[in-house]
Image (cartoon, rainbow, N blue to C red; front, side, top):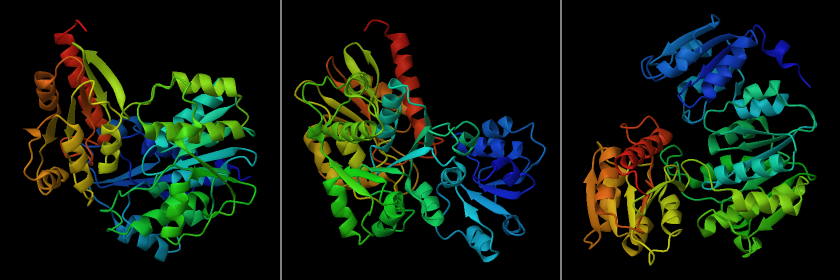
Length: 456
């Protein structure tokens, strides 16, 4: 195993993308403490990045290039560490590769340095990966198996885990398609790979090429050994054939939602979450968690923030935050999770377009939603597409410009027993820093309702 301290000390490293979610900051802190000579470059301004920059203030071995990138920062360097979402055709990454400079990503870089007997569980999929990741983690913790979260987890950087992990530990990584680019370029895959589903997403990034998107996702299993595990659904195996991707040569286990006994008192909403739970159960079983411990977590787990999160109940109206539903399919799954015979569905949706199709979303909204509250923004948006697909409809639509306004309108029209759901079906507008800020604003708006209406 490489000694990470010696490896990074004195290395000239350019970090592309600092961001506000904590991952870039954590990686910069780790590398600075290892004695690397860092350049941190981000297209956002110093003002936009102020919370992140404040955390790095004490490090004197970091040079910042903000509001722009400079080709000079991709020459005469020992390594480039790029964040998720750096464009496929980035001229800066092309410059680094032209200069024979290794381009890494934090999750795959961690995998290279992890102790040999550390077990890495990778979880990917268009939807459900966060829920599956946290379910597995909670099951391992319940069984007192040393476990750590990594990958695409809000506020968590993966690279610093190198300092914490010990042989025999389990690292459960939520991996998006961008992080899996790093695994693909490094030609490595986790020992246990979980692939939840594959649905249209990020087509603005992949320029409409679903196969290219799938190829990045497929890196989760492409380089696995025959002794490794690949846990998924039969539908996903069909996607592998559809996109002419190499078949996994690790051991394949398929699950279905009905694998979860009906007698289990599961708190998670929706059929899709029973599939997520079945995936997590399989992993936990393979890692030695006993059935009693698995069932206990399955029945107590109520979800994670921003994923059909029950925020509050006010005057008999239920408020749910599903801000991470950034695709039409995500919002459709949310709509299908509620029995509209027991209460009206009031849906808050709309946002930035990712070049996705909203025909199915509109059809389901007409069937299941009583009142649709749409967020408006500048330029051509997903909201525009939703309006176009709805066409002439009897569905009541309310237009708003701010989240607080959306929540206030929802409260105004909702009656006891109704469900108010933020499930945007799109990326966030410029009015939000990111999808999590969008969810935070929803939660704050609901909290203000509660302060004005203290009686449940």
